[in-house]
Length: 440
Image 1 (spheres, rainbow, N blue to C red):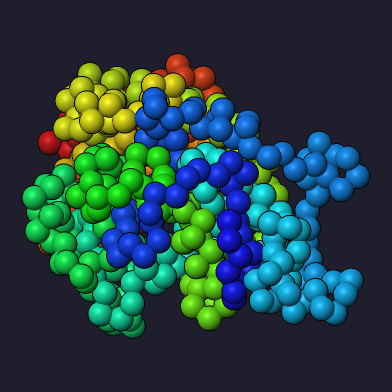
Image 2 (tube, rainbow, N blue to C red; image 1 turned 180 degrees about the vertical axis):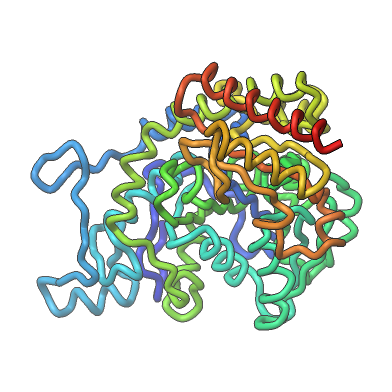
């Protein structure tokens, strides 16, 4: 990799892949994965667990099997000339030269290598939150007057960023589209102006599956650096990767030239905005990633069982693993069979009142799960999306996104036995039905 002035070294995945002419390209496709592995990965790629096992393993300073935590904010040099060479970009993290932990930190860099291995990208940079990863990428790729084409169905915070903040503060506009209407996507792209096509691989909360290979071809003629063809993948590591609902974190995964440009001293969004991950957080996350695959298999297995049984109870269930889901075959064609169809499911109760009554019974009567936002916890988490995580969308925007007022999003946990937890659901649902009959 050639050395570049004013860049603070390079972020290596540990296993580099060839460039595909990305330099200088105007259009980028960005896929958001809040639930890494939950959507599966294509069979032509390695299992992500195998990729992780092949990545570089960092040992502790004194020979520990776990790496040491580098908690320093700043780093010393042995020779005065070394600091000048580091700031010029001649010496960087790839050669174990560090300046300041807002730039690069050895512990955070190691987590970045793990994320790059999981996504099959050249590089990754870990951030303080998923939203900081998303906003940094968009601000790096779009200048004032730029244009984004985005899915109508996005996490509420992302929708607000694109609809309100970027247009007001940066003069960056967004056209929202039905991501499954590929003609609509094509027509929304403005030649010479559109810089990003943004979507979630599985939409939050409606679980619409994006056809990543086809959308990649629409966006550009070049092959992408990430799995399935996306140029950049952004993560909220806070969700399934963390698994404990105790950490806020994000990641940008993509070509080394993009990640390095985001660390440029004069123009880099990551460098100048400073969404820095704490080294202690990076260490904790690095210790959780090795059992991510095992956790995801159980999340997905239980989600499939619950979705099938809920449907038999007569509930309106949305889950990509069910054959009646509109993109079931699409996800099946993209997915790694080992990981199923995701750890999220939705139940459409039609009205917010009915959704709230169901969740109340599930939490307060039978202890099936908790009413809380976020995803990927070992307990089941439930929320009524329209009045919570998608409340940034107005009524018309929610309708276009397919979000019913009574849509209950469930992030399926894995604690307790499957039989025990299903019994809790059945009891809660029975009580709900009894109360409905009494009410009538």
